Figure (cartoon, rainbow, N blue to C red):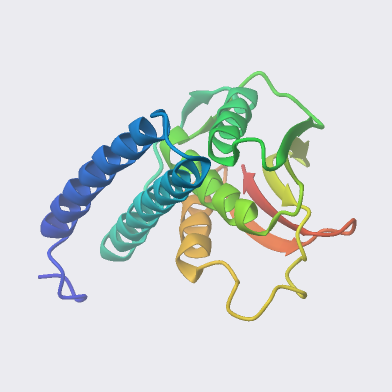
Length: 213
């Protein structure tokens, strides 16, 4: 039995079962939203669906961090990927959740045709950062991509209050930030290790950055 007292196989099975049930619940709520119901009912169904999706994210974050603790760190399996396609998928995910409530833009300061990274892990980290940005943005979220001194940088910038001005109790979960850091550290290339950071943006709001070697 690992030091945490949790059987990793049992934890994985429980999380997998809960994730499947939440997916069924989310699908039922989407179907409910298509029925000819009053506007208030549609709004409640949409909010319930967003909560189901949030719980699914939290479960995946828990499983990722738990695996990292048990195995002494995540293990990335890098493959040739298209960074701009990843950005497009994130934008599509955000627009599906927002229903027009916020504007999602993309800013490509650089567009390398490919980069080597673990797509599943990177998507998990960016999805966590994106969900956090959705909570605080006032009107817009910008998804960015750049190459800085040989590092690929994914960026999620919201126009919310920023880190210093967030209301007490409204900050992002430490679990999500831990996931992002573990994902970054799992990527190592020629002695350089990935890193992540969350900071105030000079133009306002907060910005999350994921640097991959």
